[in-house]
Length: 103
Image (cartoon, rainbow, N blue to C red; front, side, top):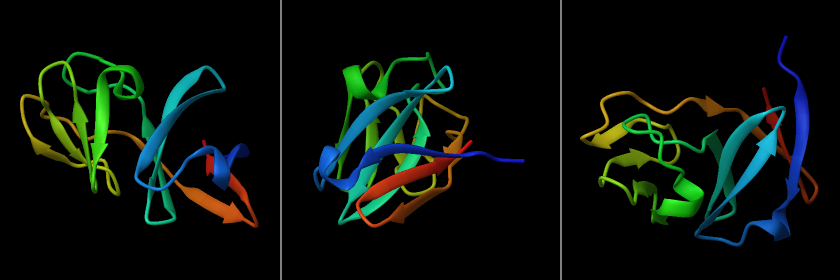
């Protein structure tokens, strides 16, 4: 059964940005797109580069800074290779100013 874990407050992740968190031994990146929050693994499926240290958010896309793979931030889907596998995503909920993810 998934566990609901408070990961941040909405003010911790400004609009049009992303931030990485260590949750239960996993590195997870949370993106804020227009006040909606999306969470996924913080590593590119191509060569395991960290999005939070070597990548960036561009609108609704996460771009890996290592080799240029592009992923849809809302779904984790690969948009541009060299990555061929989608990102693992996590369900995000907001309660007031608190952001929770389900692992």
